[in-house]
Length: 220
Image (cartoon, rainbow, N blue to C red; front, side, top):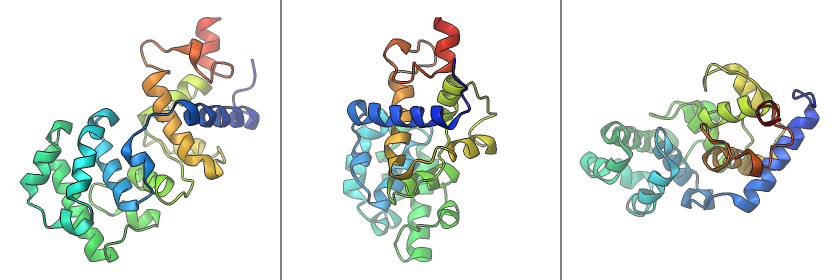
């Protein structure tokens, strides 16, 4: 068994995830745009729900609220009604509208490109800010959520306290992704959704089976 902390294994994991995603990744409308506003809205909607659920309402939502100005002046009940299937619709609606107002008033209707400025927007925390930088601005940034924590535990045997664990962010920042950041992080999300299932992982078709610590310990 190889040493799972080596740079070589990290490279193998990165390259395998990117290659797998390029062939097997799911197709969602927010993945085909680099418009920072559209990416920001998608990431805010994706919090605490599934990509499938968001995909059902995202196209109509963006058609109605193409720009921050339209979202800022909308009736809050209209916003909540459009996203009610995601749950927490009243909180989500308020965050979305407050964020649109902040973008207009504080950034001249443009989505900021600085991490610190993104994180001060209502409802935008560390993950969403990093996602916008990765997926809209092509700026490689560490990105940690439950999917990342799960996959890194399986593959490397690393245990983190949760998405707020700084050690997890530091570890993800050590992958040297370059321009592969989008495919890498979307690949992690899709691998956990389709292959590295929490209850019944499909290790026999996983692109990481050759370097995965969990697979080695549980299927040998």
